[in-house]
Image (cartoon, rainbow, N blue to C red; front, side):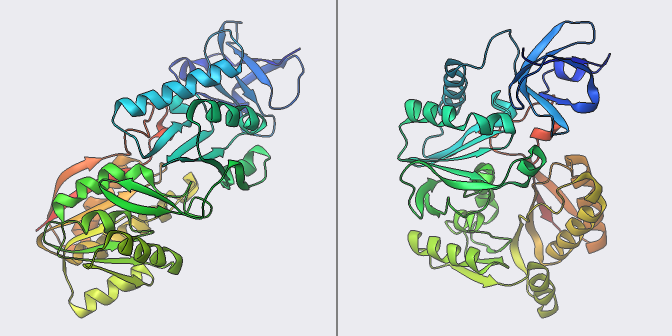
Length: 388
């Protein structure tokens, strides 16, 4: 007999509004018995059907609902969900590289699929999805006929699900580097060991938008990683300097620089905070400064420390912007919401003694859609400020 969970009175409101997560402390009682990771039915306290999802007794999120009708998790259901997610991206013009499936936003919680040319990079982030890895791979082969499928389930959230971190080829051939095209430029993506699933696809529209603020300017790109922003703005800038503490990242920037034939892109392997302070002491300024740091916090308990880190880096960045120039600044931590990030920027401008105007506020790319009912799916903040 499969599991049936009854929620405590009142706990159904958030889920009925479209949220997927059922927390263990929201459950009044559990009836039935099945193996962990099996499909479970969730009911209101008085027995009304809410939905179905995979159960995991080891996780604080005991069920992630993804079926809202009284049906089963068949292969046909997966095929329909994946095709719908793909068609939605294709309708927006995505082709060569994009997020094909964004977990809860595509009604497949804990499943991430990114397309890099003819290779798929996949993350299985819950017990239920991990147990159906073979089924999902079969669906991807049937729908998309990829050259290869690579697993990048090396995300710490799996540990909370009682799962080990795991990577490896699931199907076909996966080359050491996959060449993608983004906004008219070529980028070599290391799917096996690059950041996230290989590359930060969520900023691609923002990298294109950044170009108009870098036209014929000297640009400083901080936390450059493999050079997404640097390469995009090098198409229009006078000179670009990419800074990252990782030599591997800087090597990737230089590889991508050669791939596109750019001669106006320089690289610096060093700690960004130290570089900004050194440039300040040397009196250097730039027409545009880009800040795209890694998440300064991965838990709610570290928000204050994260805000201090964001303030520090944005103050340093603001001090290096020429009068009338631009600061382009981002945060990828969902724990620091847009209001908190904007307040931090106000404080940073005051501390730096610079008057700023906000020209653009953007979020993650449309192939990373977020649910209004689930703030956890919204994480990227992108601000363009003009600095007087």
